[in-house]
Length: 197
Image (cartoon, rainbow, N blue to C red; front, side, top):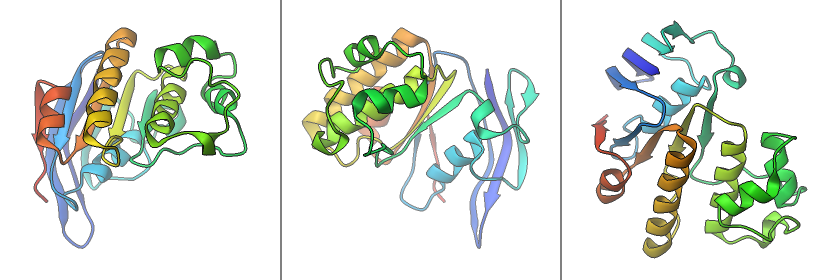
């Protein structure tokens, strides 16, 4: 169980104040808000890339504020996929888990037969699928998605959103989707949080 209690963060202004929620494994949550409202910063605080001013972030009742990012069991997918161009598709998957069954993962993310394809040969949707596959293969308990579909056309965005939901359900991974798209937020999860900056 991932639990935030009264988490607050400010820079020159308050980004968010007293954010509290609980997310169990397999559950999905959407976070909406305009640009600059702190959505991405909140995700970065949860996974340990940024600090926060007050409150606590707990995993199974244990405060993880001082737990290194790589030991939290929380994956993060950015708006622009972070992929390694010197590696092929298979190599990128194995970065997440060197013992991964690449064929199985590629089938789950609808990229079967792409093992030897170079990253720069992938479309935007294929690159985002690869980023998802690499995150899933690391077996995170929770996955944070920072507007991963926003640069895709509407048809592909909806298709990839549905594929992602199915994969998260299949693997029972709790997840948080950050988006400024109201329809996307509603499709992804029953519950949502609005950050208004």
